[in-house]
Image (cartoon, rainbow, N blue to C red; front, top):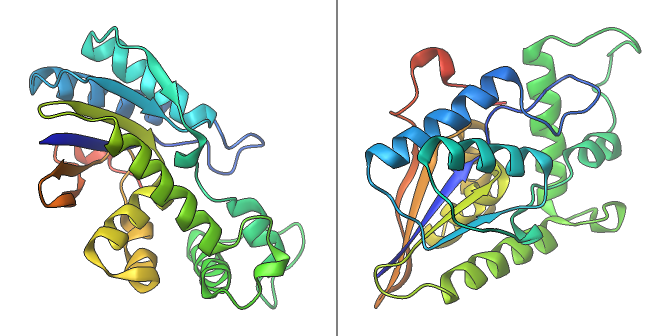
Length: 220
């Protein structure tokens, strides 16, 4: 059977003017990903990334740490959803003051409410990529990755929490409710394993992050 190792990117620069680049913690997490794969003697047949900068940076640091020389394929089907537009369309929480920074708890509540509104599908015309289009895109990316695998092959995919959570929810038949629960707890630089064989495409592990020291466990 073939194996797909989905890797969530290292921590990005949350709160910075340019979110789509790794923080110093994200860089360290990425190097740990590479050394972990090397220790486990993982030798990929294919390396795939989404098209986002944080995907590329994570992949390159991990490849260097692992000692891999594989070519990197870019497939934008593995890109994250547009959380910036999602928040803008929802609008800030009632009672929030312009120019006043929210607490982490307040922001998380806003993010979750905006995500639920987007995923519900009742306002699809307000988004450039409605939720059902996002999930179809991820499903297609998974099929493309799986179709290129032979017996004994391994593809390592560097992507984001949203696509990984949808792969897990879709393969387990959990749908949007499961996706909403898995997404917030998907750890940066975590591993999710999918196998491709006689039973089709199957999830065998989710959100593995035992390779990370406690101070390297982050969610955003």
